[in-house]
Length: 159
Image (cartoon, rainbow, N blue to C red; front, side, top):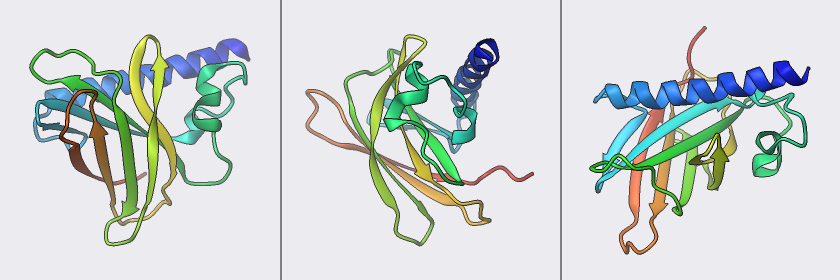
């Protein structure tokens, strides 16, 4: 079971890295934006991908653990200096998630260190609906007065 769980985690990390790389390759991707010199990559994963992680593992406990209930998703943001290509650490990141046209929920995206790479994330309820979601990201960088804001429209994949 431990080996299966470890393989699941590595698959999740590989999918995350693939998603970020694919977003970087597609200039018109709705999962990547460059704002004020910061390259922002968005990932949205079903919480079920993390369920079953053994409790001692950091991934199973991040953000207070995988929330109970249906339609829970892990929203992840990775930040890079667009010119240098270096990952940005030490940022304060918040996200608001809502169906377009409705009010949403805002949460702090917590610092995560997975496989030595810093990202930011938290869980959000995102019901299966035909309506797209709007994810608004607010980033405060250390030593930078201006707040960086980016807006993403996200649609669940259809089966």
